[in-house]
Amino acid sequence: AGYTGGPAWPRLATLAVSFGAIAGLLIIIGALEAFRRARWFFWFSLIAFIFAGPFFVWITNLNLATAPSALFVLQRFFLLSQIVLASLVAFGVVALARFVTSSIAVTDLTALRIVGATCLAAIVISVATNYRRIDQSRNSIARQFGEDVFNNAPPNSILLATGDGLAFPLMYLQKVEHFGHDTTLVVIPLLLGEWHVRQLRQEHPELVIPFDHYDPQKNNLKTFVAANESRTVVIAGTAGDDHSLEADYWPYQQGLLIVAQPKTRDVPLDVVLAQNEQLLDRCHPPSASAIRTNTFEADILNIYAYPPFNIGGICERAGLKTEARTWYQRTLRINPKFSKAREALARLEH
Image (cartoon, rainbow, N blue to C red; front, top):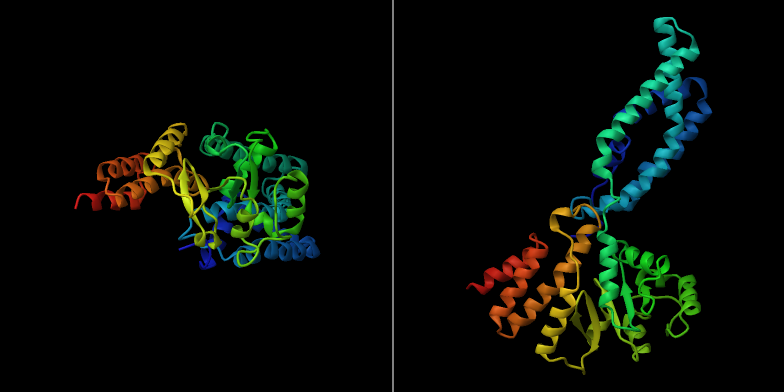
């Protein structure tokens, strides 16, 4: 199961819930008030909201059931529809002020102050009760991941990354804080644009890009890696839908990264184990209990958990059951929900 293919109604329901009870009520009241007093604005707001909100959410085709982090991606775009309807909140406040004026015989200004103060109090209470839950000022999971990846990358290597959750921390650290300056970072999806290929050529003249834009069929990773055969090419995570490397290269686990190793070049098992023991000991995987599973942090946790699982599989295939068991157990210490590691441990017991 992947990110796409899900029904539209869970996404639409999530969009509606994102407004909250107070804002939602004010928007409904404001829409009625706008329809009565400024009908052109009502229709403008409605049409803008339909396209910025429900229509966009519908065409994304994200599957919230099979990919929990898909909601994390989708929520970024809720802000646009909320901005579109924000002015209706003002209409709602004015409508409530008119209602207060007619109900308790106060001036329009006093009624507006009463309603405004009530709304402000509701906002303050909401912030006070939710701030601790949403505060991420002490969350360094993405930053630590980026530092570990760059520290695992061999000097003068080319680092390939795909996916927002993995690529963004690396891009930020390198571009903003100049971390990992001796590594050439290439974000695979961005190679689809000719503008980015031109930018990479300007910033890294030593990097060979044998095409003007990337595509998995012809101008693929195999072509790219072959053009840069004098440099080590490593991958953070997976290469996505591009399987072109599989014919001539094998995935050599080296810490958190995968080295695109030519099949003509073998590495002894004792070297693989020693290198990975050393590299992984220098990493700082986050606590599984600190992970927000509906965000990209779950992907980051699996990046830490996969290498020991992979090494365990290598040991198991080599008949080293004791070593394999140790690596599988290490995987579960990082991510207790890594089901394949549990299955592998159960297999070793039989």
